[in-house]
Amino acid sequence: MSAQRGQIFRKPTGLWAVRWRDAEGHRRQRTGFRTKGEAREVLEEELRRVRLGPLHRPNATLRELTDVYVEQYDAAPSTVAWLRDNMRPALERFGDEPIGGVTVQQVATWRASVPEGKRYRSHRALRQVLQAAVRWRWIEDNPAVHVKNPEPRAGEIDPFGSW
Image 1 (cartoon, helix red, strand yellow):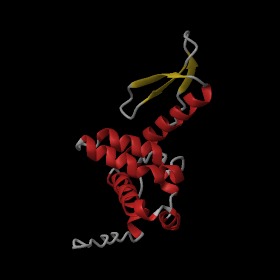
Image 2 (cartoon, one colour):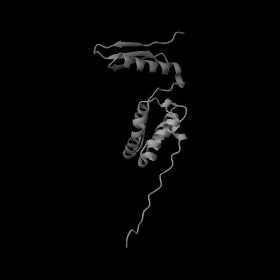
Image 3 (spheres, one colour):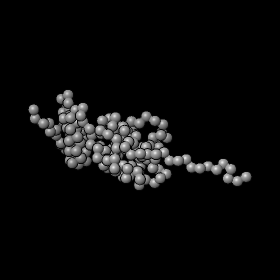
Image 4 (tube, helix red, strand yellow):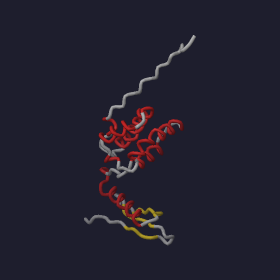
């Protein structure tokens, strides 16, 4: 049995397209790629998905994972806004890195660099998104789980500041 290669071709519109056969032997096609390199990346990922079957794990970045997670996240709009806002520091640091390459040490170092007022919530959001990747079997382990994230102490309130 030879390894499937797929096909990359240019449409009359000038855009690039890819064609391949899925695990059931059906021919699939995707189009709309501006460059041949962009089309090649998509084709390689699709062929990888076919070869590995249930063992497939996407080579997703944290930004891509976050977008997929938020898209399917069934919660109130304010909760989705909370997640997006608190993921911002993690996306600034790890956004373009593959999720499989993020280590516990990197998460611990990043957490220490986040401003104290945002640290707990940002780490919690990162942990939540990476946990989805574990459930979906995109990664084996969630590195954020192994970094302590103590809740901040509530500020002192003096109800009787003056009589």
